[in-house]
Image 1 (cartoon, rainbow, N blue to C red):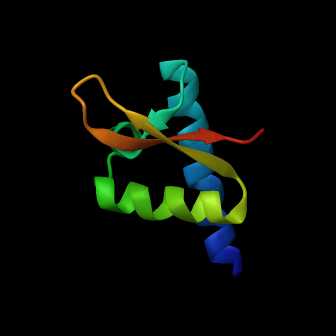
Image 2: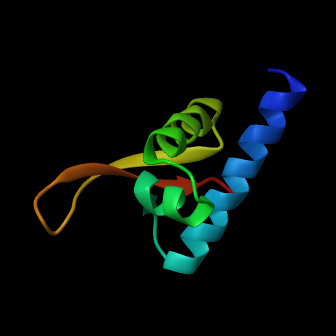
Length: 76
């Protein structure tokens, strides 16, 4: 992993953590995207990468509107 990649993932980990603390629960990629001011696709890409690197966890959930999705949480 390059230094640039490390900085990017550190940024997304920090934003995921801040968003998770504010919501007091694991959060969706959409919530993180709104918090950061980026697109949902960009948030998903980096959150999936964080999960792959072991910095975050992903869990499948069914939202109240019966839509299935994924929520993310940091590993501290």
